[in-house]
Image 1 (cartoon, rainbow, N blue to C red):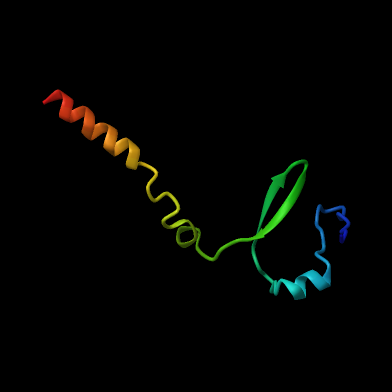
Image 2 (cartoon, rainbow, N blue to C red):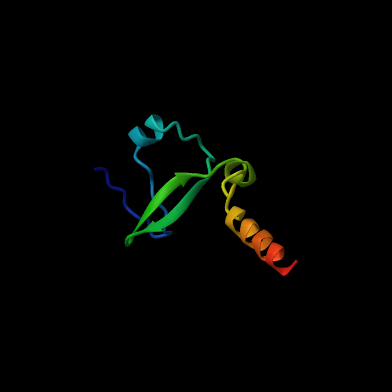
Length: 75
């Protein structure tokens, strides 16, 4: 396990071996996510739209079937 120190400006330095291993380039954007009293750093995708595309596929299928069944009962 590696550690980092928080500066007086609230900045941290990611250990060099992790930077190299994860191929993090200067200027890379990271997401900072709170997790169980700590934080997790994740690469931010270039396009959140592309990253999330299709993630809700099928979400409303049950609702559509329900509405169609209700409509059939009305007629």
